[in-house]
Image (cartoon, rainbow, N blue to C red; front, top):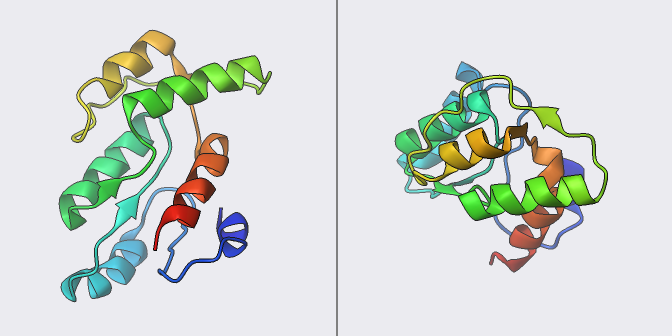
Length: 130
């Protein structure tokens, strides 16, 4: 993500992390949050990813980015159409604070989607932001 984002002309800061957010990530984000910085957040469409997104949304009042039920359904269909190896959703989906229809859709489709599956959508979103 960070390499693709670097190619997009943008002014706003972007934080890319890997894996589950540790204390160091929240410490990093706490500082700008205290100055009124607003966050958009994107993570994986799987149980741990939604749990982390809930945590970030709650803690920073972050705006979920490309994480709606429609985004999930479109990406799951596209990955199947394009022959991208689909990962089974191995855990019970967690209810998303921002979209009550997301967990039922994830249960019905049963596919985990990681950020790499949404890269083009995220880069498009970044290029529209000013």
